[in-house]
Image (tube, rainbow, N blue to C red; front, side, top):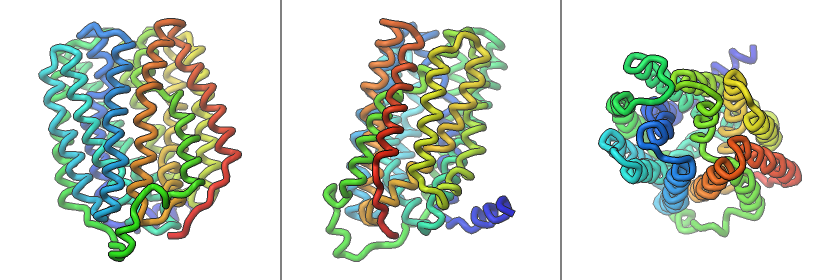
Length: 403
């Protein structure tokens, strides 16, 4: 009965939710085909160390994230979400051919930066478009479904990369340059399709009054929301780039095919849990669900730090997918709960900016801890901060707004 009701609610989701979700689906097919191989390309082909890999990932996320808050604020000012999102997806697509041409790490860093700038432009307007297009009672379901579609694309993207690796180099332990460049070419097709779906399939949501349009700024976000950002920032300082999970798996003896298999398991679990967790958050306080996800994360990172066998990483990658499925879409829904409708773009921009900007120190710290202490040290650090952040979120008192 519960599944039947959930399916009925899914079928009733508005056109924009489906268009945005399909766009994310095809974008992740493209991105996950190559981004998960990128740290292996840097390490195995270009001979780059973990500190530089952490710097590349951190700078890309952090510099691009500065655009997220501006893009979100601008979408509130003009109340136009769709075309900002289309522009962002288009820029990310245009950056991907440069990975094919890269022969040194600065070229990879530049292409990664531009690709993330596109993400910075699109993320807040896209999330605000989702929130604008759905009633509050179904908000968790909508964001959960969007995350599920996004991650289902990741599953297919990784399977595509796995197939390409297997056909071109079999079970080799290290990634070959030709394999990576083949994957880049294939990834361009779903990336272009994603841009077309959003451009042709989505519509601008309801418009506010002219008076409301003028009342755009950070002051209206409120103290509870700003405290939430501080707590999220504490958690994110220990949440280094997922490239370190890939390198940790390789450090424990996994070959390229095995690593891609782990990523498939991760994304499959993420996909299966996102929609039910989002729907559950429409009935249970979202804060409680996020805390549960963060505690799962802390235990996973402890496990990764202690792991000594390849099979440990298979189990931990599956559990990592559970963390994302439980917490990520729910947090996006909670943002919309906390701020007025006309400030959603600004709120999502600020939220994404906090996460992205802290990716730089988090990834640099992780790279330094890896080299200075041990491969497990970055994960112990992340687990400790996750436990502290979960406690802070438990003490935090949200004050949701209506609408």
